[in-house]
View (tube, helix red, strand yellow):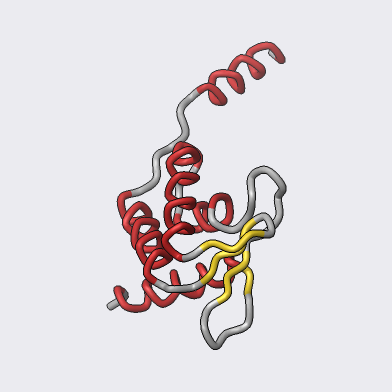
Length: 119
């Protein structure tokens, strides 16, 4: 009986991850475009990057992690908020605003974008 359970778990673990939904893919792509257009400074691993470089970096990371991402929230939490290597959170500095965690910044924009598309 125990062996059957272990085999079932092994089979489930080997199945491909569920793909991101089309709606979430649209949100992620909208966030990536927005990042590149903000003019904000993105700070990762102690170095500063302009908005375009941040967009390129997050796009590259998303491409590598895509099979693990199911929702826009997964993208923000797992890809766009911290370094894979150090675990150190990313921060963002925009004109006339205090530096803030990238996670908070991206969630605020996601909320704004969703409110524009809600009936």
